[in-house]
Amino acid sequence: MQVAVLPRSSIGKKALMAVTGAVWIGYLVLHMWGNLHIFQGQEAFNHYAEFLREVGEPVFSYAQVLWIIRIVIVFSLVAHMWSAWELYLQATRARSTSYAVKRVVQANYASRFMRIGGVVIILFVIFHLAQYTWGWVTEFDRADPYRNVVIGFSNPIIVLFYLLALASLGLHLFHGVWSMFQTLGLNSRRFDGFFRGLAVFAALVVPLGFATVPLAVLFGILK
Ligand code: HEM
Image (cartoon, rainbow, N blue to C red):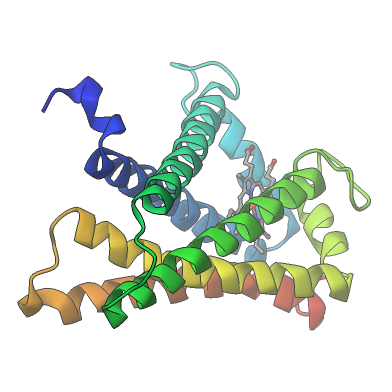
């Protein structure tokens, strides 16, 4: 199959979803891990935030690597949503009026849940950028990300919203990682347990790691 034809075929779109999803998982693991610097205190966390802008110097100029990462994740997000939408349209067109097999109905519930969860996550990301990157939601000082995070999570409603979004992210990751393995053909019965274990791991570790920060602020551990 020629590469140019791939995105138009159903398997090509699934592959595009798997690859762009994997890019986001990589980004999320690094972002979550990086966020844990906040437990080292204000200076360490702000220093880390500044390091993200300086990384790659002097080969790259200030914030250039950060911008490359931003372009890659935005492109991946758009491609991920586009392929989800196209696969949905394709499935709607192809769908017969009744289902004979229970598994198909279950798969249909799962993919509907993926779409709803995906919308929740994208709304969350927009809110999150508005809050911590653009500074439109809570008191904001560009030079002090630590303070921005602590002030942001001093509001229990915001914390609750984050926890709900992280729960959606967990479920999305569980089904997403599992589907990714199927797309890649890693679904032999012998290794099902192993790949399911990896899906559970991704679905638990990333959201729980993220959740430690708002919870620590809420319970007064970070102030
Ligand atoms: C509760 C957990 C989280 C905390 C405390 C947190 C914190 C932050 C902070 C402080 C920034 C601004 C960094 C800076 O400009 O120096 C940021 C940026 C960002 N976060 Fe999060 N984040 C969390 C969860 C998430 C999740 C779950 C996602 C995605 C689903 C996400 C996606 C992003 C993106 C895309 C950016 C913009 C990166 C950039 O433009 O440089 N974050 N986050």
